[in-house]
Length: 173
Image (tube, rainbow, N blue to C red; front, side, top):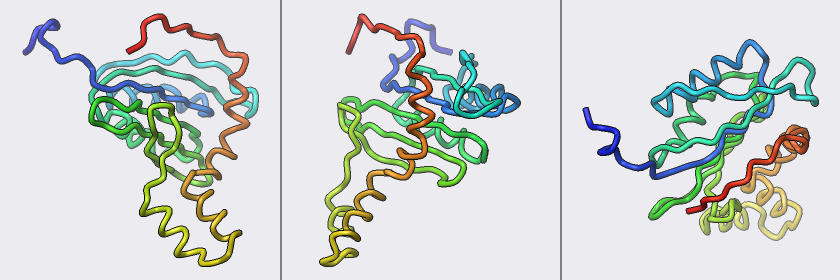
């Protein structure tokens, strides 16, 4: 087994935002996230004021490239869970954002260095082809490509964290 000094430095980092989880599910969310990371984790759970009896948490992670997808996959399948997982882009890798709501399921989008959703040329061309000359259909196709329905549903849960403690990062990069 490699010594701690010989281990490879993490190549990716991101955040798990659990917007709402039933209390009974919280330990399972930690276990699933820890399994994806290969180590035990503990979240700092707080009440989610938007949904009575629900908890919320944010967890900053570091790991190998692709860990964001592994975490999102590990959390998939619990119907009462609302979450987002982000993975920042790194050298030679795109960033990603996974959003899940009970009603809509999972949405994935590639992200740029500022966290913006990136829509591929092929997806834009497909939206234009499907919409034809109908501007409203094109608008709806692009909203779908951006994950707007997921953003709309999660926004109220995101704003509930506006009173959360601010963590100042002093070392970037």
